[in-house]
Length: 101
Image (cartoon, rainbow, N blue to C red; front, side):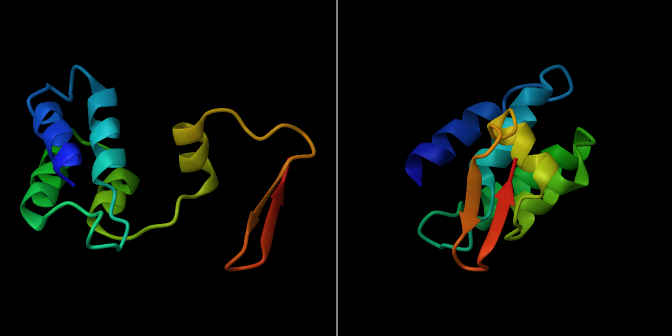
């Protein structure tokens, strides 16, 4: 957790209005996982959420930092880039769901 807090401390010094990717990076680093060993402390979380709100970030970003949230297809594409190649399948073992391209 120490490394993520160091990165977030640095990202908090950037003007997110001028560098919107900084807010997105902070969102991904601070994203709540539900695992106390991996999640940042509440104080840092509140700072990130406040700065996201100040910068008028998408509500989905604020939700990712404030609560455990599964990514929707649009968010996955933004984070991971291009769609899967045709024929490649992702399988969610918990829900027995398959997504194809």
